[in-house]
Image (cartoon, rainbow over all chains, first blue to last red):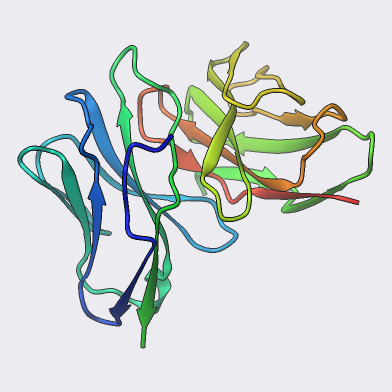
Length: 113
Length: 112
């Protein structure tokens, strides 16, 4: 079972920031937070991941709360091509952790013109 | 181009037939994975391989088989024992089994 909770759907206006929340209240100290997205009928695309600190790359920013029980993925200037299902995943990437990614149902983000 | 390729994009299977899905990567990744996705659902792990000539069962391995004879290739065979094969099949790879997984474009399998 997925260890994360996400809203089933969200809307965002084109050009505005999209803030996608994720709750992971049972996260353990070794578990990273990963974000992927999946555009209809395509393979999931890796976006970003982090452990404790906030992370930023060319696609998005990841904000993790100090207690690590929740996080927010931020797409700073959403475009129509960002319309997709966004998955938040927690995974133990250390030795002895899990090889698999456990995908929940994610958040369907619709970017409107 | 570096990346993961899967072929074919669509595949049709007749009753009682085995079919093989191809997955190739030129990223020099050691680990490779096969996932299955059913409509409106998340991905479920079928098999994974951490290194050449080695592979392990995932959560739903029954009715599937794999081989890993080359680092860049990890084909998946859907056997006639898999009673509900219609799904979207996704291959992924990572530098090692603990690193970020990157996915291919997927193969959609349909039963005639």
